Image 1 (tube, rainbow, N blue to C red):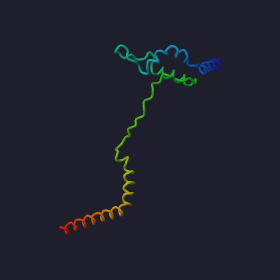
Image 2 (image 1 turned 135 degrees about the vertical axis):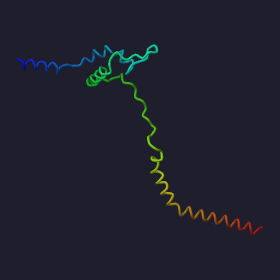
Image 3 (image 1 turned 180 degrees about the horizontal axis):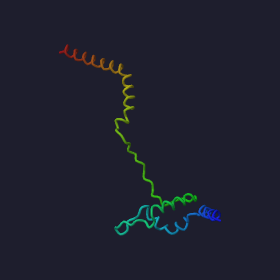
Length: 129
């Protein structure tokens, strides 16, 4: 007898469905006011439904395949990167330095040629005077 009673209790509990449709109908106006609460006449008013019950209602509604329109809109992702800028651009700078070091012999030859031409012009001016 006790076994049958326990089975009927388990069956009743297993078949129990959270009455989310009734709860949604009851708290629809309250849920549309915000997630945490709202300002009314300069005073903060918390929602008429607790966060725990709101979360359970949301969960049951999502499990039933319905969408939950009462979540706040998502904010834009933070675009500012964390850390020091010098650490982020260090690889670029090393690559740029390597490229410049490969061009260095040409640059030195161009510099020496320029200096030599400048020296020759100064010597010509000195001779002309």
